[in-house]
Length: 475
Image (cartoon, rainbow, N blue to C red; front, side, top):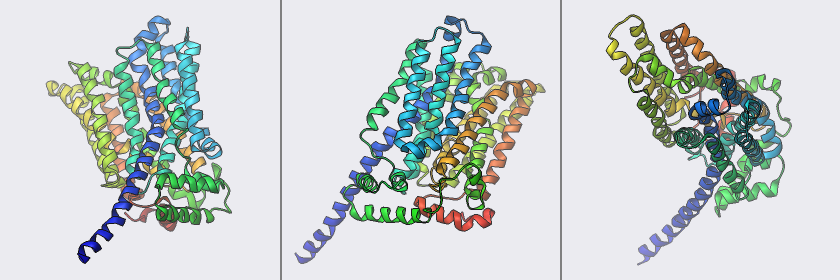
């Protein structure tokens, strides 16, 4: 009986601890869901133009050039949003930045709905672009700052999953809804987010940074529930880290190029460069044209397969990022994107030289499915996870703006130049992309650290200790 009583007394604290952790994780999951509604909005904006092109051009009598402006001006707005996103998130807080982003997006969709010509249509698209330029930065940063280290990667990867779901849903729904009604559906995630932001906490790390001590502890308690040990441990860790930064003001763009920040900047800029210049936006935006050029007999079925494969693989990535780690996923992804582009390049080369013509459509389709599937497993989501982890809090604003700007510039550059490259040489186009993907394998292997299972403060300590030996960062 004494032994049984002893075992029972030991089990009670463990059960109580498990119950507290479960309650706190529910709060974290709910908070993350509200934040990633901004990612869904991001995807909705990206997926809007493809299914409505014929309807808009016909009703508003737009030329191809005018519709091209409408499609591409989203990236221009996003670049402007990227420049200001870090400062807004630092000044207004992470929740404040999301409110501003939702406001711009709602205004943009309303402008598109009431458009009678190209001008208001473009203004609405520009406003939506500005909104998602902020979302692209603040959502992964916020999720990275509120999530426990053992689930942070998976929750941050939901950012990319929701982008993919938003884009795919808008594409499919757009085939059935009139374009003005489809624009109104883009308002829904913003309205839900604006409501939800009233019920979730601000980032504890941002609250500590701006000196809101009472709100800081309140936010930690909401995220950790009644687990006083977890609250105390994380509060001490955050405050100890902030003390090392108390004599450092928020960095400007020029400050980012100091030696102590250089490693983080190289990681962030490099990952975003390889993510975009590997050709993902060219392939995504013009997949139908690629399949037609390759002679795929049923391009509609190919497009459905191309769009559908991204959702389950991105979901798997969100699970694996905290189990397998960031670096293995990036290496597997870079290898797969290289292979997919190389297969597409060889296929088009065969077509150009009239070799095995019957195999070309299947090989191109296979290459692009390998490419987009491999991108979804790592290079799509993991760079955003790492960007939420690698920058010290005093430079997150400036660094986030820089990297976010690079992301949108890369998206614009690739989508703008893709048709010119294809006119030059389809096989050459995919050889160029395969070369970029091959270079990304080397970059990830030599430069990118593994951050799985570390707190943000531990990651900073590790990066700082190795900044003088960049290429020998521990795996």
